Length: 293
Image (cartoon, rainbow, N blue to C red; front, top):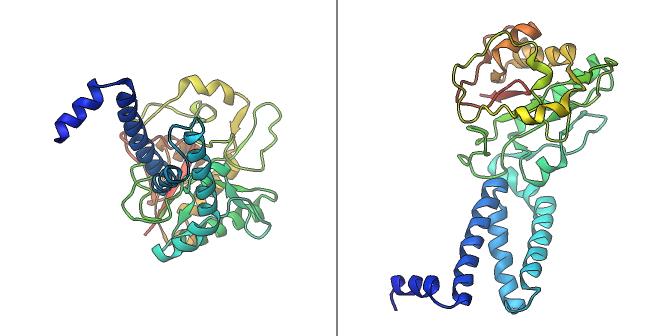
């Protein structure tokens, strides 16, 4: 039987056959999605599916659930006990997920670690540690929150939806905020669990639109901004962080710093290293992106 006949049989044949091909397409989609989101999740899902086929009968009602539990178990073991020790072979190390007294920085959400988006080259980790120490010394109690870093292994695989973040040299750090009414600063950066897209606190500083037509990645999320009405941009700490990353001896290893142009004026920090990411890249008025040579 040739391939065309087999596909025709699956599409036009009994309901069970059509369910079979739908299952195949769903499995392929899940593998692709998990690979795009976590780099290793697709491989682990494929492996889990194989184990499930061996151990259980696919006709059993619990078959799919069993595969899910196998996947979660293997994936959890992998990101805790395997990936952090294999990644250095590819020139990358994990950033701390939780703040310590020695270097007070952390992932803005544990999801960044769970999805393997917290890996960088050692020199980037060292830069973040020095930034965190500097901010804590300047503003006691401050904790720097990082957002997307890079995947643990192969160069060239982009960390979607970013256009870069594919070589271990890039890192996003969240702005600092304070309470709009009381003026009390929040010790940790980020403003909320995701850390991205809370543009509203900085919108009232914008004098004019930089891009006449925003590109596909310059999401505005206008419907989301109302939940950030209690936030105000902490100008002092965010300005100090931008200054540390773009001026002086501490910034020597840093090649570029991305932030929206209007915030350069608002924060009053000027450096040749500060760049505009462009109208086809993501907005940078919710975080600072820096990358090393």
